[in-house]
Image (cartoon, rainbow, N blue to C red):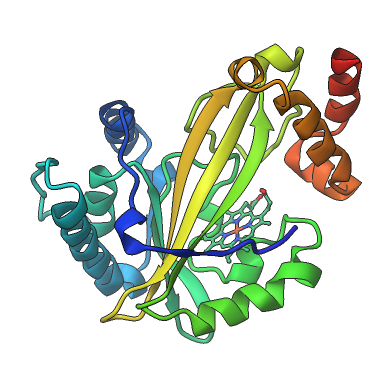
Length: 254
Ligand code: HEM
């Protein structure tokens, strides 16, 4: 488990692809049907959310000028911002500590936004085994050092037993069936500081592909996945819902 942060050129902050309209329609449905599950805001995050919306508009204008849209000024700016991009958006504001004060998370990988709003990075990550010992201090220090002119990105991945983007459950199940029924889900996360409010923004963009497809594209996918599963400590395997998965995969590959 590492921070794994790499420098981000802000030209690549937001990724736009052929799934844009499908994913934005899904977001729209979630805002209508499950607003409380996918949006959480505190007044402390309002000003930064408005700045985030302005930054996203600027970025789209500069790097994706083909995109046109309208903004509903009656909506919270974190919702307006989220309607423009495939990313999920989290705004953290420094008070006694860095706290999550506004978020639109339509595509969580099995966590519950309502339990995280208003809390610190340490509290947000409390279910993650060894985060406290290995990543807590460096992540807090990183948040204090982040500057508007230096942004970063990192990747997280997991295996799930269905490709749905909206998975708000906090219970993690192991993928069932054989490798061909599993889905490989990668989160591309970015971190940047907004120049006016100095809030830190964390974006999460999800990519899902079936393990079957990945295996067909790359014969090394199965063996590489096995090596990654084998190298994860048991506590992490339990947390991610991977217990027993490596053995299943090993017997399939042999
Ligand atoms: C440098 C910054 C960060 C690092 C290194 C980091 C690292 C991690 C790691 C290692 C995990 C668990 C492993 C996994 O699922 O693959 C995790 C889970 C998570 N992270 Fe972060 N993270 C960072 C920033 C953030 C921020 C800013 C948020 C704000 C919302 C966040 C929200 C979460 C959540 C909600 C989970 C799932 C926790 C649960 O199971 O309830 N992370 N993070």
